[in-house]
Structures are given as C-alpha cells and as structure tokens.
Length: 168
Image (cartoon, rainbow, N blue to C red):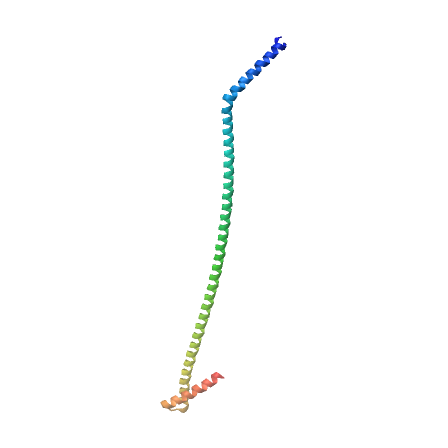
C-alpha cells in the first residue's frame, strides 16, 4: 500500500499544502470579497432594520403618550363642560323657582286687592240698600213723605249708626 510509505506520504502532504494554499489564495482573491460584501450588506440591512424598528417603537411610544395626553385633556374638558352644564341647570332651576315665587306673590297680591275691592263694593251696596230700607221704614213709621233734606239727614244718621255697629 503506497499511502503508508513515508516518502509517498510526505510528498502527498506537500501537494495538499500547496493545493490548499492555492485554493485559499483563489478563495481569498475571488470568493471571499463578494461573500464578505454580502455579509457586510446583510449586517448593514439588519442594523438598519433594527434602527428603524427602534425609531418606530420610539415614535409609537411618543404617539401613545400624545394620545393619552389628548385623551386626558378631552376628559378634563368634558368634565368641565358637564360641571358647567350642571351649574347652568341649577341656576336655571333657581331662577325659575324665584320667578314662580314672585308670580305667586303677585297673584296673591292681586287676589287680595280684588277681594278688598269686592268687600268695599259689597259694603257700599249694603249701605245703599240699608239706607233705602231705613228710608222706607221711616216713611211708613212717620206715615208721611219726607223732604230731600230729611232723606239726606236720616241716611247720614243711619250710615253713621251702621258704621259704628260694624266696627264693634
């Protein structure tokens, strides 16, 4: 077996080293540069993708913070508007209550004035009827006709007597 002979074996090692060196030189000169460029390009693309992903993440976080801030502002504004609406409703309710109270007082005052006018009118009518009745009674008692001056004097006396009796 020739591969076990030492002088054959050493020459085989020599040619293997030479062929390996030539192969390495050819690979180094022609194959490694494009492979290294492809690897460097891939590394650059991966790095760019990671940078872009980080930028997008940062932008998303910033957008989320802005959204949350706007949401808080809108929520606060809604609460403010709701509080203002409640306050306005309460104020309108109080104003309506005051208006209704004033209207009730006005109606009560009008009714009291009307009652007083009707009482005076009734008293005047009663006095008038009482005077006529008193004159008729006096005419029949005296069995004679009275003059206008007598009528007037008797009416005034009857009125004065009636006024004194109604005040007691």
